[in-house]
Each structure stands twice: as C-alpha cells, then as structure tokens.
Length: 376
Image 1 (spheres, rainbow, N blue to C red):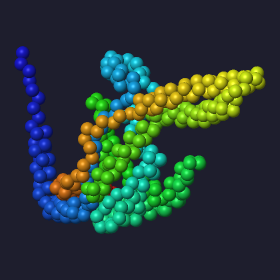
Image 2: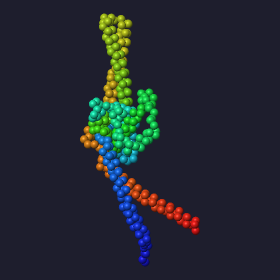
Image 3: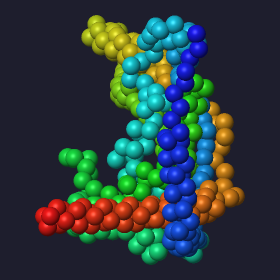
Image 4: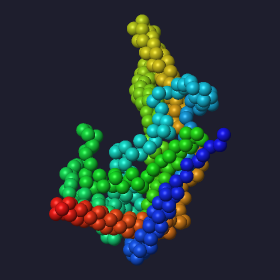
C-alpha cells in the first residue's frame, strides 16, 4: 500500500512571491533605511561620547557567626540539604540575605549620605549628599534625549512637597535633596549574597575611581558596624547593667572597708560590749559587700567575654581597591544597539508605508466598485 503525498505547488509559489515582494520592498526603501540607520548611528555616537563615565569598586567578605552557631553550622547545612531546619542559633541574628534590605533602609542611607569623598576639581572633601545636590549636573544632551521622558513627567507632576528630616522622635521625613540622593543610591550601592558559597559582594559605582573606592570602603565599615551593634546589643546592655552595679558596689565596699579600719583604729584598747557589737556589725557589712563585690567582678568579666563572643567576624576575601579602568559606558555596544534600533525602525517605516499604500488602493477600489454598482 503506497501513501500519496498532497503537494500544493500554489502555496510554494505564493511564499516565493511574498519573499520576493518583501525583498523588493526593502530594496525600494533602502534609502529610507540607510537614512534612518545613519541618523540613529549619529545619535548613538553622541550618546556614547557624552555618557558619564562610571567606575566600579567592589569588596568580597564572608560573614561568620559567633559562639556555638559557627560550631554547628556544618550540621545545620547538612540538615538543610535533607529538607530539615534545625533552627540553630538565635532568632535575632541578621542573616546575609537581609544585607540588601539594610543598605536600602532610610536610616542607613541617611548616614551614608554623610560620607566624605574626594573628587577631582574640588579642593576639599565633600559629602555624598553635597556632591549630588550641588556639584553633579546632568549632561544637557543626555537630559533632553534619553532623559526627556523623565523631564516631561517631572514637569507634569510638578515640584514635590519639601519635607524636613526629623530626629529620633516621630517618623522620618526626607527633604527633596535627600529624596533625590536616596534614589541615586539605588544605582550607586548594591550588595549580592551568594548563598551557595556563603560570601557577600558589595559594589559601589561612582563617576571617578577614588570616590568609588572610598564609598565602597565606608559602606563596608558601616554595614559591619550595623550588624555588630545589632548582634551584641543584648550582651552590651547586660554589660552596662553589670558595670553600673559593679561600680556602685565597689564604692559601698570601699566605704565599708574604710569605716571598719577607722573603727579599729579608734577602739584598739576598748573592750566594751557596745564596741564589740559595732565591730561585729561593721565586719558583717564588710563581708557581705565583699562577697557581692567579688561576685559582680566575676559577672563583669563574664559579660565582657560574652560581648566578644557575640561580636561577629567578617573575613575580607577581596579588599577594596581603586579601579583602574571605567566600567561604563561601553561605547561600542551603545553604538551597535543604536544602529540596530535604527535598522529596525527604518525597516518598519518602509513596510508601514507599503502597507498604507496598499490599504489606500484597496479603499479606493472599494469606493469605485460601490459607485459602479450604484450607477448600474
């Protein structure tokens, strides 16, 4: 039994005609495509030349837990692979997965805005906030080409209401300048946590190499200090309490010690019952305070040790270094993208014009047919 294959030569011919027609349309509109590509190439060249330079500084570190958490870390990892959570360690610990939320928090960013940086052309260090509110001005070409939609949108919305930065009381209200720099920080500072290998990479971008390294180094120190303060907060509070009680008891103990010594000096040859009773009372008070003082001294040393044990350790794998080459802009890639975009738009214009012409012809032919039918 043989199978007969259906062969439709008309469909193949139509496909060939369509491809030939498309090629013919492109050839006839080649001047339009070339002009469009040339215009976009010039725009891409201008954007590539006038785009602001950007330098990237990065640092890599491995956060290590304190105390028993580090000892049982391997067991916890094996349990996690098996699908179990041993819940080892304190629930109040800050995991590296939370670091991005820390650097994007308003208090952290407000503190980061105070970072002093050194820029070329400025004879003194300026804060990050002052640089982006007073010294940094956008390129007019970029502002009114790529940034034109943002300019229009800003004009439509109008100037936002200016707030005032509050202190420790009440919610935080940002000023217009702080809000502007806060949005900028989202592009300047980023952090990535590799949960597989357990390291954290902090990246900072700035228009100059030295400020990029300075910002990365300061952000790293701020992040470490923030995490350290959070983890040792309870231990430090206990240390402060024990230290206060120790200082108070020390004064009382020294006072009781001096009173006992003075009484003995005044009553060396006195053997009355009243003197003996007073001596016993002073001895009892001295012994009690001595015991409390000794115990608090032990607790004070234990509290100091606990603070050190709770202090997290950050192992710096790759320290911050001043970048030698800029990371952006990639001028060849920008030019290629603009040329490619010009080719797509030019091709779309050619086919769109062809489609409109065919649509008009069909519209006119339909009107002529209706007119002939009415006349007949």
